[in-house]
Length: 280
Image (cartoon, rainbow, N blue to C red; front, top):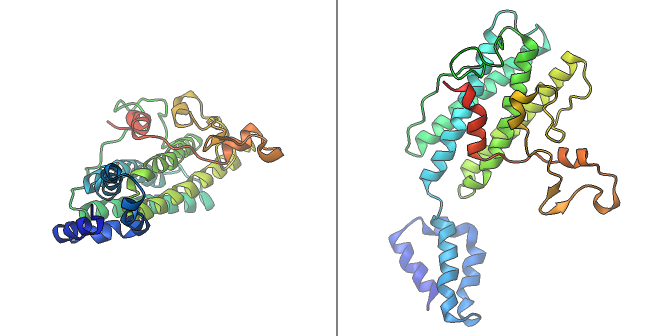
């Protein structure tokens, strides 16, 4: 079996093949010599694996992830836009500046995602109608008064940011076939992480509660309670790559510190369940 000849023929049918495989040149080089190393019957399986990586993730799959991310960004953008505009909600000074900055970031994320989806030939999903009381449209959910009660506003903001960080991490693997889209998504992910840390600092200062850290400890909600527990479940993991981090290499790393070292990803179903009460 002449693998180079196969690839040459495929390139004639797909001008983008070389680009698809350019990041896997080492794999192709390895395949070129595989015939002399493995039984002939093994070659189709090796080729199948290579082309699955090249073609297995369609643009449609990437767009689906981006549409999901866009819905979350709509949620955050409208939340901060309404919060920043609510009379007397956010104290003057640094808090006003911080919320305005985060609002602008979230609206920029919406624009970026909509433009990217359009560039990929799809139509961005429409912005849903939101109920920020988490009452599924009743306006009477557990966060009733969110735009008149500043501590409650920051509590909901913290939950959105912490959930967003975990949601982007959960989708990173699905974007790995597109360097450009993955890079953009990871940039948004880092912005969300900065938002999460800053909102937590704001709650820490507002409540004079040093137990609130700029990161998540275990699956603790930082005092918000059961209404947001789903956003934190699973964060108490203390192993990474099947390695237990507690006391690793004879250090004094505690269970709390081990859980704080990494944010755990949330899958799409879990995130949609979390935001469902906020979407009418």
